[in-house]
Image (cartoon, rainbow over all chains, first blue to last red; front, top):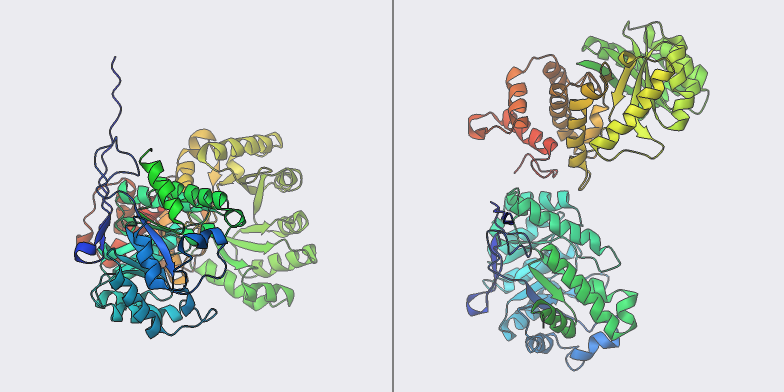
Length: 301
Length: 295
């Protein structure tokens, strides 16, 4: 008797989210199959995308081998962002670390001006992360949204504590939101439900928090996997959003990555590959060599 | 559905202070209120009762018995307090609770035989909480067999599958569904045994104002699957009305949801919609979040 492999067809579809404008735009999500289940009925029209990090200040705790590829531009975010493009990124992710009151407390308008310059200098879409300080981010991200009006940046983190104010600014000025919750599927859904009341769900990207290999990565893996299953198999509207894996910073914080370059690349690479297998739609990396490594792996070179 | 009133509970500060200061009125008011709203038993949950267990328990039991004729459920993990409580009861009490743990088998279960009372036996063992239906059944069969050997009949045993909060990330909803299944097959596995649950635990960690809806819905679902009794809040009028068949339309909607029938939500009142959504969460059909009624 011939064996016929079963083919699954699911009813859920991850929303296709567009970031950026015009010829600078990028689509993520849109799949109606589980990650890499190409044997099932359906498709993933937008394979995983990659961004590299740019900081708004000279990084203080990066090991030399992480600084090395950008050492000539490390204090100039605009040039740094331009240089990222030479490594074949799909997007650039600007981190406004210096706005954190515990770091430099850079004022919101200064951060917004810088963001606008960076966005204007590159020909790929821009992702912008605030410092994560829930109060300061209201000022900073609202100002960024306003100053960069109409550029459709991907802006976050939008948190349970500030989603109303930040969400409103992101919406008013035509951007897309990153909804971030602390590694918990119930809280993730709750935030999406609440945000969706004031914000179109097809402009939300989920950041479930990405932990590094050896530092809780399996939690991120299981969570991403579950979000995809619940969205695609059970068609839960509030989990059918694409996922961003912001993992560079987490990986390069580890002792292992700091020790030497090869270990660092493998640490970041293994984390990235794992989250990609779990179903992440866009990954934010730190080291261009990791990006190269991952692309070679995907293309089985 | 036999309702064991949960309101005399040491976690409530007023109760623990009243016991310590021998303030009979606080305790008696709670006992009277639960009696009036239709409870079948009054639970006396005193925790481990480390200090003066005999004296405290004797006072508590006699204080409650002054104002109610209902039988009592003596709820403590301290065998000394337990024995003092059982001894002081006028009516056949409920020993709440024993388990498959060695310590409990040696010190609690024999008390049920000695005082010829009903006994709650949970699925817990020395290995902890059995994680799925099969292991729960296996554990409880072992412990019930042990109880039978001590001379305790199945009819006197109230099995407790242990309810956990549905809001626990990842696992909570699986536990809720597991217990529905467990209650459904219990009668086939252990003919004659009764069952009970600590109902309110299902909504632990959920915003306070939303808790009763989860408790009520889950009780109806468990009841349909054959649950005999629940430790619950008899002061919740809607819960009591539901258990006594006073809200047939809601009950029917919950049953239909359990049967995965198509329900047209637009034809229902807001309250009915809330019950349907809640039942879906408890079955594991929709992912839980604190905003489950809003999506």
